[in-house]
Each structure stands twice: as structure tokens, then as C-alpha cells.
Image 1: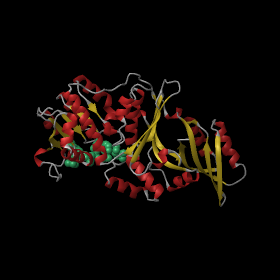
Image 2: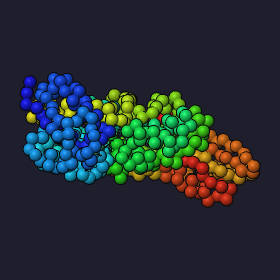
Image 3: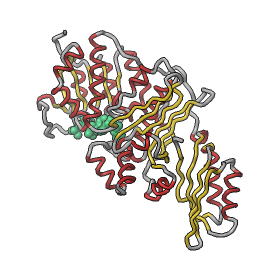
Image 4: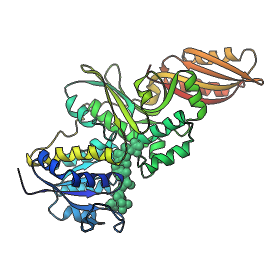
Length: 429
Ligand code: NDP
Ligand code: HSE
């Protein structure tokens, strides 16, 4: 057992960082045994130095993260600041200083993961990021390591705790969107700017990271088709209920049948109540991974929050510290396939479309013809009349997204169609 401690710089001490510091202190003896050397919190970089931080020696606090990394005695940096800058420059500085990095920063990894991995590899250092996807759930390492001998063809799941919390509250208690978002923010689930959660950017960043790992290719944030959940209404939940479904914000990554391309998308979707994802409540996440030999695997657990996320960060800290002592590094980026990412128009799925139409003879036939003209086959139609108008709910068979978009454009042009109330994909059947 080495007695000289490995020194850790904690960059950021907010919801996640404060829990990392707490567990490092309270579990110090166990961490020492598991690593084979003590780990010492050697400095904590923050923005507001005067803020009271329970359990943290004020002498460790600094606002100069760069100086902390450059002072010459740091072995491992934990980046839990978030966002692109200064996180990117600090991680790069860490590598220049011979410091391995643990990060929870999915936004940065989705945008600049390739360059950061290259910098880590060039310096012979580790970049670990289990906490960046799905909070406490061990997912990155199982996909990168345990499934490294298999071929992953599909990943589908709930990867954002905040939006799952909001959708769950809207569905189960009838809570309003803003009320549920405020509660998720107070519980520490939301990003510093919750737009990242509700507009799907956070889930898209996680989708990009998972797609890269699953398909051994590079998928950037911009490659992921993204729709948020701010438009999901109580009426959508009522429609979903009538179909025996609920609504979840899903990330779906697929390898094309010919293996030559992939798709990556994030959007709200109806899923049957009998599907395991339908029972994922509050800020929990769940991810299905379908691999050729392993079959279907499901990963489930808390997807956000200080302590759950700190658990994943600490797991990475132990792994990186062990590598450091062994003078080794863990697996780096594996992006040897360079598969193109196909546009959303190529995605094939089912759709639930609510239309407001005139309630008169021939309207149903006109609508059905429009679907047929675009090659979209109808599965079920439900019509409810109300004062000369009617609400028409059409559920389609599987069709390409581009064909559905063409259908909807044509429907909007019909005089008898007063409006398209909602379009939602139906998954998990
Ligand atoms: P917070 O906003 O709670 O904490 C951010 C921390 O960074 C604060 O301590 C802040 O200082 C510090 N900080 C901000 N700017 C600077 C700067 N320029 N220099 C030094 N320190 C700075 O964020 P979270 O803890 O929620 O999230 C951190 C990271 O973890 C993000 O990447 C997030 O996406 C990720 N993550 C978060 C999860 C969650 O559930 N919250 C779950 C999974 C990942 P100060 O305290 O003085 O304001
Ligand atoms: N804001 C993120 C979420 C934090 O709600 O899932 C976890 O990555």
C-alpha cells in the first residue's frame, strides 16, 4: 500500500461536486483500500469563494482553477463545472500538466469529445466520464468494456432525469409543466440552464456520446435529430391514455440494417404502458441496449441528482487512480468505423396524429387519400364530432419520417383540415 496520497483537484463544487467532496471525505478509508493509496482533496475551484460549503476546508477553495492545475502536485482532476468554457480549457490544461481527468460534462464531450480524447491519448492519460450519461447508472463502462466483444445494433432509453420527472408528474398528478420543472430544479436535477433539458439538448448530447460508444464511430451533438418536450400537453397525455400508452422523452440510436450508417434521435414518443420504459418514474433513467450476441440488456437507476451522479464520478476516480498507480491507462476512444449519420427523414417508425377537421361527408376519405398518396399506411382511425367540427386521430403503420412530414404538409393544405393538433411518434411496440 502506497502511503503518499494521490492528489485530486475538484473543479466545481455545486450539486455534484459537493457530493463528490463529501463522499471522498466520509469514505476515505474505503477508497484508500480499494485504490491502494490514499486520495486527498488538494484543492477546490469555484466561482463564488465566499459561499459557505459544509465539510470543505476553506483553505482548499480557490477561484483560480488554472493555477490549481499548474501548481505541480495534482494527479487527477475532477471537472464538474459543466458547459463548454472554461471546462474545455481546464481539461486541456490538465492534460498538458500530466493530470488525468474525470468529467461529468456531456455537453462538452458531445461537442469536443474527439479532440479531448486525442489530447488524453497523446499525453498517455485517462479521460473517464461515466457520470456524463444517465447519472448513477453504470452504462458507459459496460458499453465500452463489457460489450466490447459484441456488436451493438440499437440503444433506446430515457436519458434525462429532469424531463422524465416533468412528464411523470404531468401524467400521474396532472401537474403543470412549470410547476414540475421548478420542482426538478429545486431537487438539483436540471442543468444550470434548464432549456438544455426541456429542449432535448442534454439528452441529445448523451445520445451522441452513447452512439459513438455503441457504433465505434463519431457522432456529434449536431448529428442528433432533436425535439424537446415543451409542446407535450395534457391533451397528448389523454390521447396516449386512450391508446394504452404514456409519453416519454426517448433517445434512440440505430444501426441501419445494412450496417452502413446509423441514426441518432431524441424526441417525445408514446410508448405502451406494458413497455418497461413506461414504468420509469421521477428522475430515473433506463436504457435498453440490443447487442447481437447478448440480446436485450436493460440498465436502470437514478439518472440525475448530486449523490447518484457523485457515485459515478467516484467510480471513475477509483478506476483512474488505480490506472495511475499501475502506470497504465484505461480504454480510450474507439471510433474506427466512421459511419455516416443518416437524417431524420430516413428513420422508420409509427405515428399518432391528431387533426381538427370539418365534420362533413368525404373528409375522412380525403384524409385517408392524402396518407395513401405519400405511401403512409393507416393502422387505426378514431373520429369524434363536436359542433360541425371533428377531431380525427390517425395511428399509422411504420413509415419513413420524410413520408410522414410530406403527408402532414399536404394535410395542412386541405381546406377541410382546420389544424394539426399534434404529431407524436409511437415507439416500443
Ligand atoms: P452546478 O451549477 O450545481 O455546479 C457548478 C459548479 O461549478 C459550482 O460549484 C460553480 O461554482 C462552479 N463553477 C462555475 N463556473 C466556474 C469557473 N469559471 N471556475 C470554477 N468553478 C466554476 O452544476 P452541477 O453540479 O449540477 O453539474 C456539474 C456537471 O455535472 C455538469 O456538467 C452537469 O451537466 C453534470 N451532471 C449533473 C447532474 C445533476 O444531476 N446535477 C447529473 C449528471 C451530470 P459556485 O459554487 O461558486 O457557483
Ligand atoms: N440535467 C440532467 C438530467 C442531469 O436531468 O438528466 C443528469 O445528466
